[in-house]
Image (cartoon, rainbow, N blue to C red; front, side, top):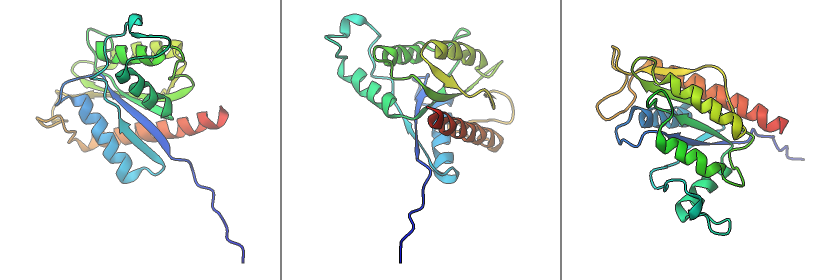
Length: 198
């Protein structure tokens, strides 16, 4: 009797990056919630939080014969090994944060390890919910060959009632969790489609 080997859908490895360095950041809370949602209810997708706090400021003088500082090499390896990316991008002065832009710049140095991958953006804040940072991040993505999902978009109005996060930055709002899950499912579908085409 022959055994039948069932083809399984590959597990997508998602690198999650937070543009805020604050411990109780709403953006860190969004990423931790995404990791829990993925673990609990989305098969075939794993999210790993990739810390950017130890990265030095981007400086070509730190590159020696194509070798980067150890923290940068480790970061670049995580980015290269991922199938797609989830950015939690705060809006600072109508744009992305300095730490996030710094991380993007390091991983775009030759060889650019972002290229030809799928990505999604989530944000939280007042006024526009951090939304202006999305547009600058999408512009950056054009140059580094990163491909963002178009919809759904997630801008969380963090200071409106009812509260969306607790005092530790943990996402508590069920509607926002549902919207975050929709973003993850869209990223999964797009990343799988993109991988097949490539």
